[in-house]
Image (cartoon, rainbow, N blue to C red; front, top):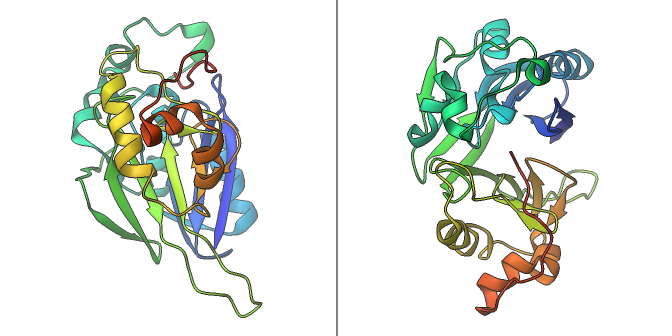
Length: 242
């Protein structure tokens, strides 16, 4: 399995390209602000053929390059219906005016082919099967994508389950809930329902920051510990995301 990721734009949002291997079809996850060039470089480097863009949520730091990336490769994008409005009205999603000096030129709107995600869906794309979990809290339409673990490779390597968590769960923190559509209680419920049942070995690739594992976050992340034990999370690091 090939996962090529890079931080893009003013917010350092992680964009991922996921494929069975080099030279094969791929899925692009969260092509955000100024991500188009990085996507093109990764596609050329690994000889990939994009077949879809999938979005963990609608904030512009995760979606700003959807239109040019979809247009360049003639592929559809997938988003939860509760966040679809942000594609055409990104300022409404963050409750503030987007500064032109910061964002530069933007192509606002939906790509030619936009598909709505549903809870519990299984996406079969690029020879991979990704399960979709609705995980509101950061936004009403936040979702995660999970790639199940795979059997040992011929070289004896085992591939653990991978969770693309968007802005639900980060290394040491979680997504902020103070923007339009955010809800702390919903976020904690999503952590309990989506993250806690996963195996400790599950690799977490989030919307911002470094990769981690469910086991590491179960032991050290104050928010995940809060929902696991029913304790508080006072005095914890600030939450992340746009």
